[in-house]
Length: 102
Image (cartoon, rainbow, N blue to C red; front, side, top):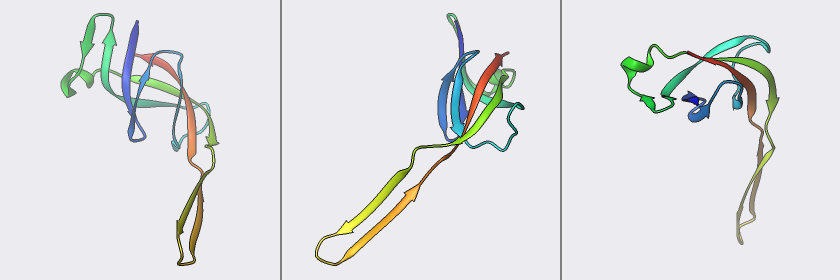
């Protein structure tokens, strides 16, 4: 089984061919392809790490669609002072499908 650990949006994701992965928003149209930078490649018993070896590894993914994440509500409150603050946030996300690991 071949899989790779890729760096995407400040996180690392374990991907193999055909996987759907949700990343932070990527500036690319739906249907276009992009290349993800590999941190580690596992091919059966062979494990490849290091900058020199991974410069040859290409992980290609196709953009499926763009979406927004679940709404997060941040509430701050301090007792007996009348201080209340409410703030919301929704992450901009992109779903990609891994097409090849070469």
